[in-house]
Amino acid sequence: MIPRRVRLDVLDRDDLTCVRCGKPAHLAHYSIHHRKPRGMGGSRDPRINGKANLLLLCGSGTDGCHGHVEAHREWALANGYLLRDVADAPLTPVLTYAGWRLFDDHGGIEAA
Image (cartoon, rainbow, N blue to C red; front, top):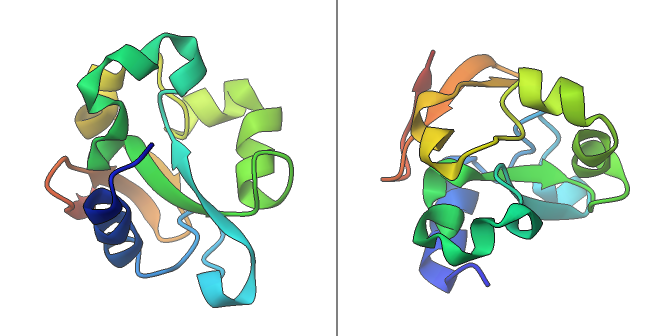
């Protein structure tokens, strides 16, 4: 479970907007996506719920941008939406609607 404070920080950092398509969260269902999936052994790592590992995406794991990421895993790996190692989260840029961005564990975002 993502701690409430971390969830709020991610929503604020991502400006309540899907980082992939730019759709405002109030116009669509949204979810917070783990770049390093919890089911791939990441749930024991305390960094799994780190801000650099989390992104706001529209949809769920089966629809919207979140569904696209889950259905196109090689694309998602190549574009930073999925990671093989949670330690790489602050070092791996994500291709967002605004271009390539780096997300840090302090809730920051910058151009890559």
